[in-house]
Amino acid sequence: MVFEAHWHGKWIGDCTLLLERRLASLNAYNPRLSLTRCADDMFRRLVTRIGVLRALLASLTIFLIAMAPFAGGQTQLSGWAMVPTLIVPAIVPMLLFVLPLDMTMSGIYQSSKPVDQKPRYKFIILMDAVLLAALILAWLPFFYDLLRGP
Image (cartoon, rainbow, N blue to C red; front, side, top):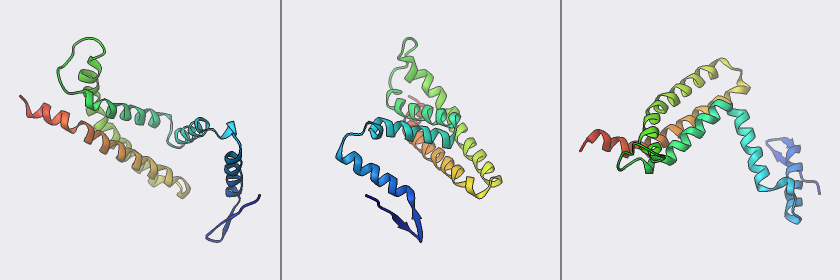
């Protein structure tokens, strides 16, 4: 079976291959197109697109967002309970400065790059903005209670 996709006057040959693979995967199990392999490929493309350090920054931010519900309550001074009550709340303000700095530097790099590389930096700025908004929303109740006092 050969399918071709027409979009704004251009024939896209990749769609033919993707559609044939999709049809083959519907008919029989194909381990090359398994969900974990697709997820792994998608993660590798993302890391290649944004860079290793930005991927680590995004991973740390997602981890801190996930730890926000565990930060309230009594402060623990020993054991693993120290992580959400002492260590994580100390790292959050640092990222509140690092993410806007990364957005600013990406904007500066974007202005000096050729047109074909500008979407990469637009994606990085958008990703950082979404992560920053999620980080602020997740940690706002904790810092509000902290600053409000007893």
